[in-house]
Image (cartoon, rainbow, N blue to C red; front, side):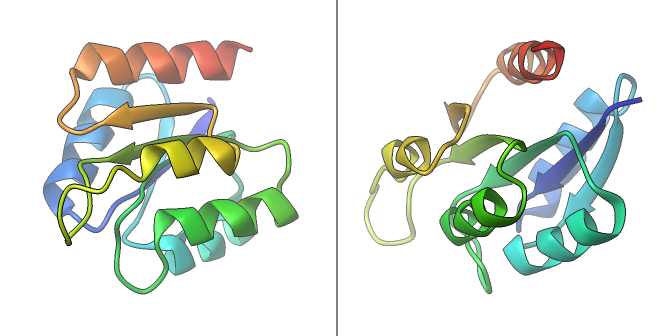
Length: 121
């Protein structure tokens, strides 16, 4: 079973994604980028779904670290905007190598399709 690492500081979003993807994939959870890097080192993953705006280590910094350590690892970046205004971080995530970017709120079917397509490739 393919492994997906969900990285989000919001428990509700982590729970939603785990419920949606847990039947088809092995799901791991992390609250921030630093915890995600620890889980990747321990268990590996085929795909990361990461929020961009998080405390400790944000999703953009996580993507930079992932590109250095795991260049083939696919990433889906998700964001609803920043804490200051509604800055859209997703174009930056694309420049950093995100395979897909998805705006919050998103349709569950959109996320499921993105995960399925990326893991099939």
